[in-house]
Image (cartoon, rainbow, N blue to C red; front, top):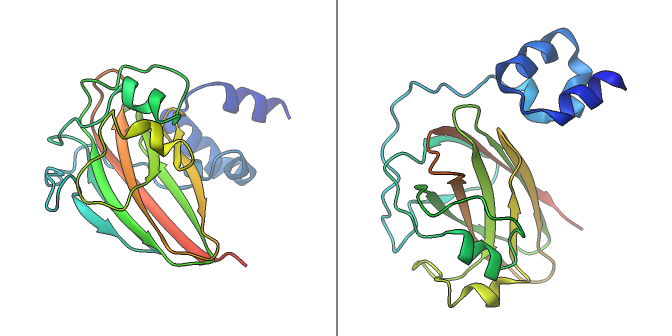
Length: 192
């Protein structure tokens, strides 16, 4: 119990990855600790939008390595707060983003995991059918479909659909102007 409290209270860089190799049960605290750290030196293409504000379309049961370096900045604290994504302000105004689109079939559970030991990046998902980016004026309409995990070194989010398909923007964004490499894992299974 003491180790869990110690590791869960602090941002954990590579120390948690090393500790998890010695104590595999720590992976239950954070699944990212059991994964290999993201290579911070690899050069990935800039996440330039190819369709509106979307860089790439994601598929279920894939792992994507990318970067936010060179991305545009579409969202900031005002957007995230007006969209009820997060109550806190983390100075997202100057951080480039990598923006993806995920089309989800009905009756599907999607587990997203962001590993970002290279920079303090956050995972955001919002229901959005269009290829153009939502703006601050659209944000209040996202209140039922915006989720954000602001945990350091990445985080997880779970999406579920019921009777209808849904389209989501999956955003990797940084606090305080942060940018860097990350790994995004998309796992899908039948929900019911």
